[in-house]
Image (cartoon, rainbow, N blue to C red; front, side):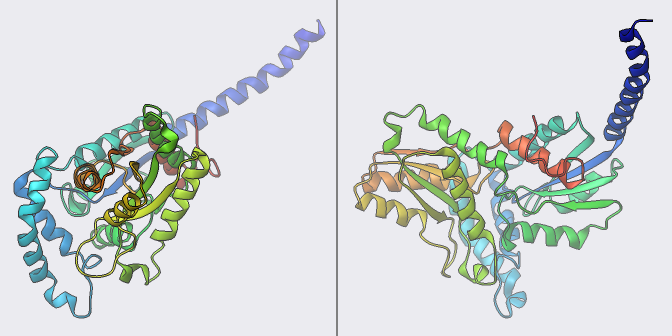
Length: 356
């Protein structure tokens, strides 16, 4: 018998054993059932939902908290929601009548399922903090099918007591675990999340004349200083995201960071977006690109606060060329980041930054 033939006969059992082992591993992965809970803020989908949505928001002790607040919180929430509902409802009317956040989050969930299905059996459910489907509805949805692992994935890249912390508190108040639970509480520095922002920015800059002249304004959701002073990591994580985006993008453009969405008289993170635009206009800046760095989906803070209010404010200040980067929504790079986070959380891709 020729040497080559003998070698083939010797190798064949090893090849077959390897193939059998691979099939077993793949079958085990495909049979592993994972449920993923996607946490988001939520938003009213129609005008009649605006006031009850605001009431739920301002009833949250992580939003309104001061000595003795538990005694007055519901009455205060009712007062604020009643007074603000007319103006806020008008804002929603100007962006189409309601918030798109539920629809966009559900699209993210379906995209995540598709990205994970080559690796595991997966189902994603949405849990909105202040509107529907709320925590109780998400828990009920989980009861409809069995799972081996539960992954909690707040869609807030940066951890804050007021966002991720609040969502998880509400979840833990209502949910009794029946399987292994895995938590992903931040991903502000995930390579694919950073790449997704850079990709969005590059796509927009590519169609602008003289893109190197545009001032880059990174805008993150604001936070009361009372929360920051308690050790909230949010501002430092925002800083790190902006630093990583600028390093990867390597643009020569001037850039600044500011915060938006301030509510109430207390001191918040500064500078605010309106103040930053005034400062830039005072320095002669005529062209800006606002990057909503802490928002994964379009909603009232991007579609109205930036794209309508800030745009009008900038125009009144003499900033004649105003642009806003679209939110990541179902960006393939973002979905890849989320899929990688889920797989690593259940121990299937330890140490892998991203996958193709």
